[in-house]
Length: 453
Ligand SMILES: Cc1cc2nc3c(=O)[nH]c(=O)nc-3n(C[C@H](O)[C@H](O)[C@H](O)COP(=O)(O)OP(=O)(O)OC[C@H]3O[C@@H](n4cnc5c(N)ncnc54)[C@H](O)[C@@H]3O)c2cc1C
Image (cartoon, rainbow, N blue to C red; front, side, top):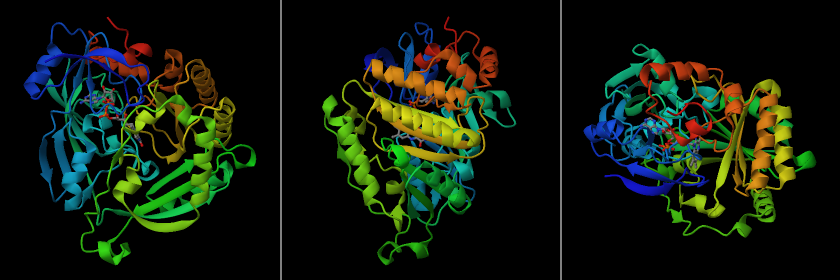
């Protein structure tokens, strides 16, 4: 059944009317892709990409979440094969109690395996373990001509590389074979360190990198002057049973459930003014001194998941998330320029996230390369936001930086082309497997990745 629905990405930025289907079987998925009245289709997982990557206004948007069967799990090796519509949360719920966790995880568990592969997502352990695609052994793909094929490092290898980070443009992922990693507990041993400014934060990250699997800093992006870039670093390792407080040791893989709350409606714009945000960020920094704590995985990896619909705090006009990646030699000066531009624009943003990135992803369009990445939310204020993102894009381009397609909602074709050297290679692979451009998203159209027929 096809329904008409106005949808957007997680940022609720510029929603558009779409024709949406949600097939319950692989056969129905095949029919949705082949459907004669849909010249184009795009997959949509849980819609956690921020912009227009998972919508396709003139064609069909195909939700994958009803195809969520775990197909096989080998307890001795930790290799899972599951439908692409299975969420990371479902994987964790089933397999963490058995001592297996995700190889890496983004900051929300409400992401499908298909979405995680298509964006080649990264987590707080990128400097150590690389991005999601590194643990993917094989994908099963439904192609534009209706064939279902496997792609891996040894079979259809170029198609595999076009799928990792390829934002659904090479074909519809129907299953993912993934290597999970063993864990003794569902807790992290976390060390908190405060850094009074950006230079100190980068220095601390460099110094601690080798000792911690997980590393992330929450930056007060409105601090100015000598405090520019001040932040709280969270450095973590998986906790062993002996690290846990006595009362958690008998159930190390099943931490107590957290209660979740909902944001009941869209907030009015005045709630998120610079004054509120500045006060919140200041308080957050002041409350976190140097400390060490054992924290359950949910709290450490998914701090926002306990607040349902938190995106509503940005109101009806929505927001974007700007994520900038800079190479090491440009990181300090580039981050200073970005933070100064954001501070000058007075566009309120709650804490921004700074991470150190490791090796480049294998996908043709994988986002990560070695350096530092800064991500922050910016409310949609119309023209002032557009002026700011133009300025931020310009800074990034001058410093050999890169934007993340899973977050992008605003950039331009020439900016993207300058940032992704393998874009033409992706187009060539697409020409082989999808010559009539059946798989297209609003983002691919906006960025000229695909010249729509
Ligand atoms: C609170 C929050 C925190 C986040 N933190 C991080 C983070 O730390 N690191 C990070 O890397 N990302 C992060 N993200 C972004 C998120 O991980 C990615 O956008 C991810 O792709 C979303 O998955 P999804 O299932 O919601 O996919 P969607 O948003 O629905 O789709 C994203 C892309 O994947 C494609 N796609 C989805 N399913 C398939 C399929 N079966 N076959 C082919 N293509 C498919 C879509 O066409 C689209 O191009 C975060 C997002 C939120 C909301």
